[in-house]
Amino acid sequence: MLELTDDSWVTLQVDGKTVINDEMHLGERRTFDAASEFRFKTVGNAAAVTVMIDNMQVPPFGRDGQVVHNKVFNRDSVQKLAATETRGNP
Image (cartoon, rainbow, N blue to C red; front, side, top):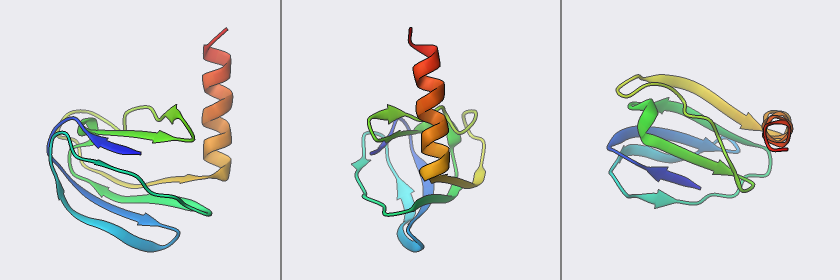
């Protein structure tokens, strides 16, 4: 799940196919299913994008106004995220 806490340009590929290449706005929410990979090619306001993968919140991509490129989430990165979340929650 992708939710915006402020306006941001987002270019997102799911399994190699571009599903978003547009400005998204505060409050917008989109959900996608991937077989192998989510690739955020560009996020124009890194702090404005909240991402949940498999019911786990992904740490913020960056600061308010920061532009981030090529943030990739695949099975390995999601497993690492789950392990980090488990260690952080006794």
